[in-house]
Image (tube, rainbow over all chains, first blue to last red; front, side):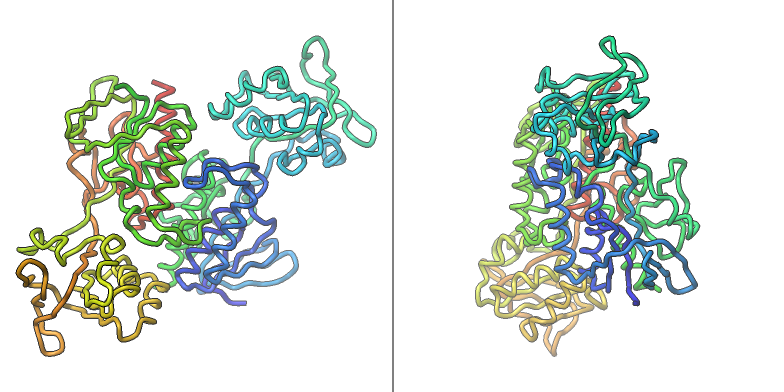
Length: 306
Length: 306
């Protein structure tokens, strides 16, 4: 299957790139592993300029419709192998399908971080959760914990407060750093929320599901905390495997280095969104979408001149 | 009047910056000369990711509501004088009002270009027009011309075609270069549109209003072209006057140089949108909004650490 442009990733960056490419009349395919990237599970989005409030899933759905409207094609498939000859870039999926493109946009996003605790995998979905928008509603009237010290974990606490009766926010650092609006909203929840700083989880305890956690340092005189559920929100790591296969230059944190046209160091290969280092740690839907638009424009210019 | 942040300009960049700043709980004022910047008069916007189609005016109106929702204040006023002491930036308006800010975002956009013909000013609004979304509907069943060879002029032709019975597109260059979707739409209009390339207007003729134009080179055997109206769409120049007052570094075309955090070379002063050179000539609503978000975030970080 031959395309003018292959886009790997169907988050805000990939979808915005596909929409622009469609307008440029490029034959475009989006390879999606999981629909909508991080945005799809981000919960309420209230900072996409022009849209006062929207669920992240609905936002990427709208972006998808926008991309399909201009003729982009969407295919399920996890890209596992990238290569490049003098003219074309080849993308192979885990199902063995092969896509050939004149240009490629890597809109890979970044992978969620895990705690790395012993029974974490076994208890996932059984009291240990990663997507609070998806699983939060399961904990109506229950006691839960959120692990993380940044803005997303505070947003998560605010979301969970609509369901849970008690929420512990467990942060490794000395303080929780979040957007003031979100932090104030959390403070407004009063005694429903308890913030435990300079602490970490040592162990998960429970038979078939999480029943309690053991903390590294005692909290209110006890190292044990009884919980019905726990959410992990401790950041993301970029996917470095795929770009490395093409010899794409990464920064020291593993994010793809791009110039202001979203060009990587490899001809015909562009990147956009959270997988890039363009705006540093400031990774938002509005920036991902803009970088996607820029990448598509550069891919279009490249394909015209090659 | 003291603020954490003063934003000059109320287009997509300025409004997105104000919304983000409001979320950061910064006391923010937007100084607006004309509401909505270029977006407000850009006609139909169909490439803002997530919004299939919206009038530009409505898009900036939504962005304004979004900014006001988070507490930003909007003031009419043309900034004419900028200065900076060690702590504060001062902005004076043409009405003599003075605003003091810890930080400043220049979201100045760029100024529309004129043809520079002798009777251009006198006939403005009397057959010579610059905003086709505003004035196009006045020419129902009439013969009009659009001057320009780029995407905006082609979009203008497509818009005018809903009203006018005949449209000439006059371009100085050898060809008209536009987004393929827009170009194809224009071609679909058939004989209603005639494209005149490698030509220019020498003279406007008409008593109280434009009646005809004199072309530099004859077209179909005549240098005269009878017109009811003419629209000028030949690009933009950035505002260099205000940034120069603060010693802000500009590129060779007069656009503000910024780094990836939208910092200018002057402490506490940031820039965003079409006034910057960040994405080169790729100047879109989605990029303006993203750069506004980045600028506000940097202004917030600066104000916290100073």
